[in-house]
Length: 330
Image 1: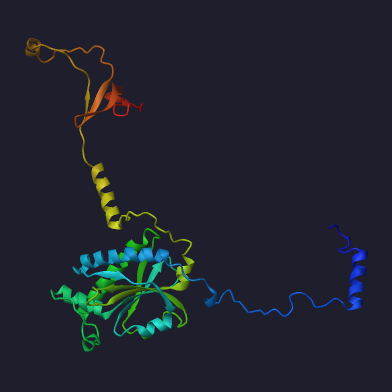
Image 2: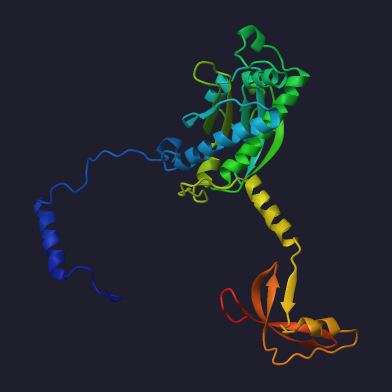
């Protein structure tokens, strides 16, 4: 519509005036409709967490955690990943028994601090196994005591095993780093998050179905996980990825192969000679070559390159002319 042009014609305006004057206009549209307040920032209105990638991470983590405990503590305990739970931080903290080994951990690039929780039973079981005993559930009276110095050392080893397993488990989806910040025994002294903050609890139970040997919890702030949802990569390959140790071993093997010496031999040509001529050769004799043409370079007895013999300055040299194996010009 050009500037100055009327939206309605004079006839349309007169028709509207007549309807209004006659009182037949009636009620307007969309009157009396119920409405509800909707806050986009409210936690209740946020979409549910897609846990598919986290479940893949947990499946890898349970395998790596078992291997890591076996390596660090010679403790071969069954580890099973439990269902992922989203709950309030205050509600979760109230359920943690005391004492427990609680390690505040920075898992980069997650924005906020995370929590690694070791059930006291896990530590007691590792100590029993370490000293040649049989891991078994302890009574409530025994489990209520404080950790000894030996148990604190074992708890540190278990924590390092968890960190190692976390790096391996997250690697196919996202490269992370674990940094230990501080530890507590009493969960009420943590003051990590507000009680109403949402957290993602991933739990790994130790032991079989008949005997529970404690659990290991990794607790992520829900907001931090949501910020990473665009960065997490879903692993589609059925083949399990190589662990970091396997990659280091493969790299070391390639480096070691590069240092293995090989013997390269260039055959200048062949001269037919009789035994009598060979027997009469003496120092100073000259053996002439005619029509040498191109020769071959062999490595450990295998012909690899076709070469041309010549010189480079004051040194004898060969020029690579082609690959015998592929017959492509070099």
